[in-house]
Amino acid sequence: MTDPQAKDAARREARVRRDAVDDADRPAAALAVRDRIAALARDGHLPRGAVGGYWPLGSELDARPALLHLNRLGYHACLPVSGPRGTALVFRDWGPEAPMAVGRYGIHEPAEGRALRRPSVLLVPLLAFDRGGHRLGYGAGYYDRTLDMLRDDGAVLAVGVAFAVQEVPAVPVDGHDERLDWIVTERETLRINK
Image 1 (cartoon, rainbow, N blue to C red):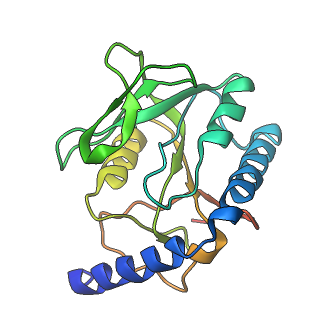
Image 2: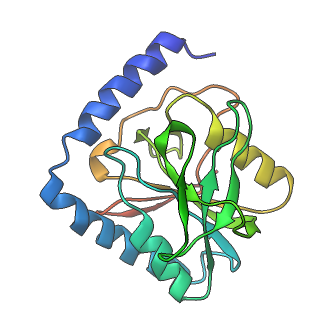
């Protein structure tokens, strides 16, 4: 098991790198990621169905342009709703006109009454990633639990979304950490061989 202090130190370092991305560069990076994810869909790498995204928190790369583009291609766009710590995320239908609520941790999420969806593709935020498909999250385990549950219940494709500067040589991992299938940055699209 990885030393929790090592993971916390890695999170602090990763947040500093991500926070340092210039605000002027962020919109272009989000559009580049959108185009790369659109290419994955066009080339048949993304299974049809619902695609789960996320509402950007702090300095996270904004995946909403990719999510909206996939919606126009016929995917059902959905965003997560955070339950109590220690539980998996649930996903509700989302579109730009959807009523939103402020949920746990101050993150925007679709309001009550929106249809529940089971993503076949999940765009995953992160603090850091490595070329082995490992991701460093915030430490609450929401995405690891969600991926574990979705994979137990059938297929789901996990696509890590990040700025290229978030890459590290090796992410500290534990046995419960779920690997990604793809990682998409503004510079490249990485298919993870497992």
